[in-house]
Image (cartoon, rainbow, N blue to C red):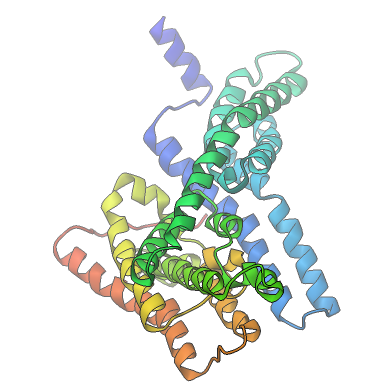
Length: 378
């Protein structure tokens, strides 16, 4: 009986393994996320800051909106491709991914991963088993997938909402501890299959999130200052992870990998992190250093859109959010050379320098070895 079962699974190309799910599927999902949500957000940022209100700006925002609207479908399709799903199963996963992302909110990407993997394998089991495959396979895949989305996506949303609440709690701490905790946590979330940008937007980690309340008196300056500093710390953590992994993995990935992670997404490293979690330490240590420097030394505030706090150097959205936020600071807050120096150091120089030094130490001690950080650029 076991041999028959194994033979059936093999014939259906259902290979239950850590490599297939934790490395292949998750690695492809990162590419799907970048090809939709991240590139859409980057295009939107360009549209918002290049000739605002112009025809070109409006069209860029429209294009970016289309890209972000297919986030769930793109991730699910990428997972189906990694799991070598038959065409009908793969294409049906688009509806499943869309359902997960819509129901899951900030936990949408996490829901897409688990639900799409399970649904894809179930779809493969029924594929080409009947004479009306063109009806049965997509019907089973979509129905099973959407039902699973209805069951599990709210759980993923609750998990991410709880994480958001924790981040919100951290904004009330003293600047040093707030800077360290938010920088580390948001940086880690950025690299995980969770939307750090969506969590930051939901919690409102940015001074820009409460500008209207500040204007009408419903929000105090103390609240604004805390959220603006928290936004700066979140930006610092995201930059530390993105540029950190970019420079840390440069010996394995070269210029292409540096750009893909430094301007794209550090989520490309998730398959390697699942195999060897210690690889996470250099960027985490860096974020624990740059976060407090951002809040206590340079008082770096992100007063732009809250979503920019969770983007880091992806398309330079994080630094752009910091700079554009300077144009709408409350009365009494001036920006000059000191703020520019702080932003450049926190967002670019220190993440590269500190992580590079830590990486040298880790390689010298054999903690990081050649090939450990190699990524698949598709």
